[in-house]
Length: 67
Image 1 (cartoon, rainbow, N blue to C red):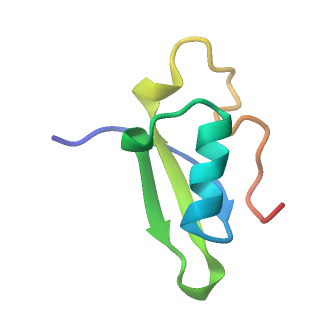
Image 2 (cartoon, one colour):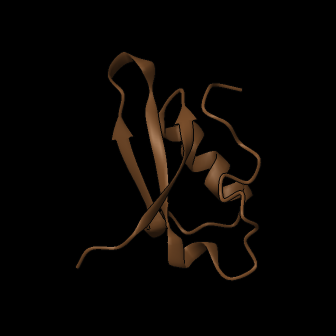
């Protein structure tokens, strides 16, 4: 079964992306990672996990790039 995902942003590694998701109360089962080689990973989250209360900025203020 395929799910629709919303791209959130880029992280240095998968652990950083998981930490961000945990801080935002997202279940790890709703996460999708795409490797960017030595540049880290891109995190996407299943849209249904974002819920109706999500603002139009589904990246929760996060922009592409490292913190």
